[in-house]
Image (cartoon, rainbow, N blue to C red; front, side, top):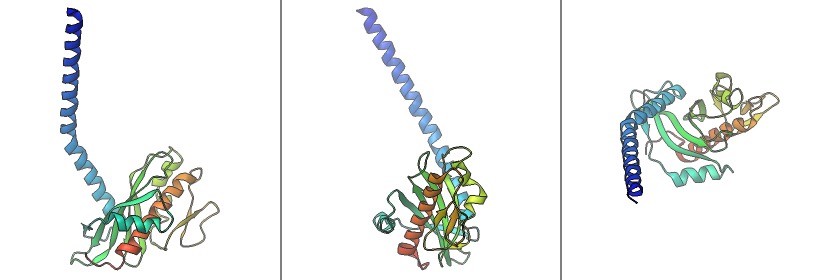
Length: 203
């Protein structure tokens, strides 16, 4: 009986120590991780809207944004944040939207996209991409991403037969699912821009 109690006490002590160490490690690493995520986001903002001097976050209207996206028939996409892209003198040049597509082959695809006031997409950049190596991960290559840049369209579609129109994107070979997820994510961002942000007006 004494050995059982002793073993239980030892096991409990080990559990408490291990839990304490895990908690301590979490607290120590939480701030550096958050800082790195913020730096990655700031880099992505500047990548997709290079001419802006600063970015001011727009107040999130989840209900309106979700409604704008669902009105297009999309169900697995969301826009989580939006920023006004401003010049040195405070003029609104357009917006940068941060979104997620839940249609990725390897999980959620998080991205940012820039849109000028007239609806021209300035570019896209990924915050999180976990697709298949050599297939879906090719979405991060310039030859795919840059297809969205400097294009003005109400929405984009993808094709396997060679893009022939302004709103067409060449699908990634062997990665139709990833192509669809990214395209739908961009279309969700355009829906929010067109319905809720268009015009460059400050809230």
